[in-house]
Image 1: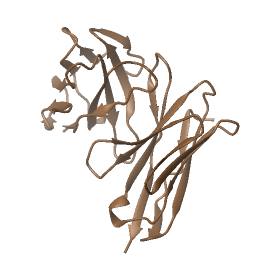
Image 2: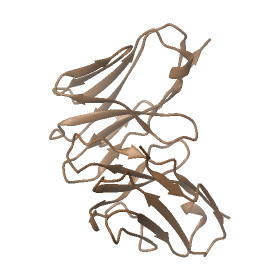
Image 3: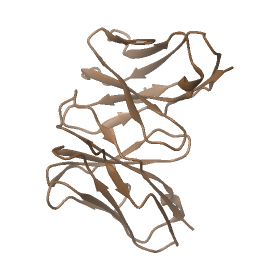
Image 4: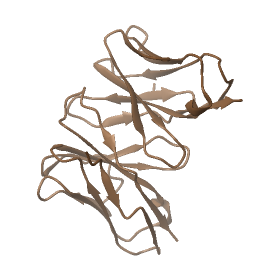
Length: 109
Length: 115
């Protein structure tokens, strides 16, 4: 298994729909995880951090499943502005940071 | 406050030339990271610093790449004898510390094009 794996997409979703995608990781020792959002030709920006069971922020919910070693990101009531690439990040303590290749999301009007 | 800044924003060079890319981290951030991102890929780790020292440089692709952070703040990524395959966006990020929960804040990147 790769250290961090994401479905590259693209996910084409109509505006207002709910969309979810996963990120699997191989390092069972990882304790914290992050979702970053990256717009085209822009730098990644932190969307959410995920500790223990999960995190919710408005329309966004991130969950962690340690047994199956994946984290998920769910977006409710999707907006056109949610169109971006979503990067999963798995830090390793005192070690390098591993980014997934990202999942491209297109919200369709 | 000011975020991470990188200069230049774009750099076009010829194969075989030497380039330097600069990163100014957020003030007070002790950890600094360099990544390289190619089109359609996630950022690829290159090296990170804790203070002045390179804590992990295992991501540097070969000895043409070198990075320094002499005073524990500004960092420079140096690429010798550039090759066309070095073309990418070079991202710098900084964080308060090296804890797993420390958020990395990214600069806008330097787009390097090697002709």
